[in-house]
Length: 203
Ligand SMILES: [Zn+2]
Image 1 (tube, rainbow, N blue to C red):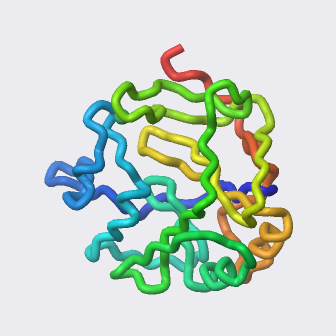
Image 2: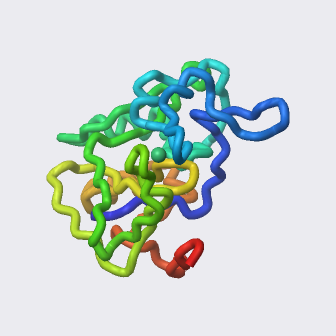
């Protein structure tokens, strides 16, 4: 398995949020009922199933980039490559006002569990049960799946932070895409190379 890590990618496109009159990011009205009143996180998967607002437009030349919320956005070219992969089980959510681009979300989602040394799970919400943050730990993740493409669901303060991963064969295929996946690196799943272990916030 190889992870597809964003390394040098601008996170520019907010999907679920917009700026309010004071320049602060707020959730868009169509998703506000999906926000946890305790921790303020949004149920992103349900939000995606509702679609993306029509006033969101952007132009990028990459085949893959990240949303403001750390979700992966892919081009038509990459979507075509992924849909051609046998057994790929992936949702592509289109941008009504940015034709040819999609949020990609695999159906095979790995949810880190307490006690797994590959992850550190911080600040569980008493209301919705989500964690404030899920980051890489010291251990090596053991992921046994048969899907060619999936995602490990880390968490940041902005919400779900999926890390796409693929079998070695599929990773090679994606790497050979032209133009290449600029700004992304393929690496063994786990704490990315060069990333120092993060201190636990607040102690
Ligand atoms: Zn919550």
